[in-house]
Length: 429
Image (cartoon, rainbow, N blue to C red; front, side, top):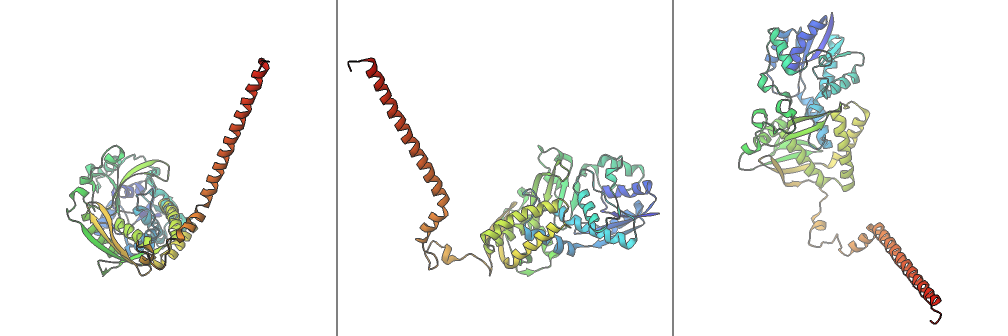
């Protein structure tokens, strides 16, 4: 009998996959739930897997590893996808794939199954993560082969077999949640012209108009680019993110509505809730503004763009991603200090930043002249800095003068020609 390790969440897709695998493969199923901070009743999830036909169910607590080995590298890199997406699902999938392979080896399984659809990004992330560690294992993705075409089909599939359906049809958004974020797809979001029904949809965050009428200040401490304390209280990564999720969520922070370009080529629309992550990204950037020099910051912006593309595209376990992370780590040696932010009705604004490695020097930057800066030096600098502009301008001026002189010569010659012609026509002249 084939043994299959299934990435199991307890949601609609993976709940339907267990009976489908048993009906289409002579197999024993080991359901694996990877806890990366999603809100789940793991006892109920495990029981649902067993009731649906799994031989066993493993719960792997990976929250600490997720934060320290995947979230923090993305934060330090300032990695985003298409300006809005803070890579919540994208950072978790490589870790889940790695744990699936570890379990498969331990269980001596021949295959790994997952519930990613044939249109989505997660199939790429799971497959590439599995391939990176176990190219010999078979990968089974039922959405790429079964006849079910929709979430409604999955609900009917379970109902016909008298199996529990883990969601209501009217709330059948496709969701992924973890410690870092919650994503929502489907229903009214499938038409980009529709306004999202935030009151019904949101789980972690209140709509901004429902947030308090009074702003709240929050102070975050960083050490080498990693957040270590909130409002003066030291916290581990998991606790810190949860605290900021609660604070940011209460003020409507971190709601992103994005029509994005999927890996497979199509556009899709999603609503992302990342309250704590949005606060941390903002604070981290404010600290980098005072701690990094211009050239390093500018190049890091380019690296951030590439890092976001790699993570989104499932290329975490690649030499380029590792090399970029090594570069980022070198830039974070001086990104230590405090950042104070103001949160108000979905908005974040800076309320000050300080660092022992700050490159801001008031003696230089102040409008009051100091010993380190001589205003007269600016004239020579500007002339040298703008030398290409000056040379080009002089060239244009020379060409314009030459053209004008040439036009004058032609006009004078034309005048002489006309006068000669007139004298030839009138001999008395």
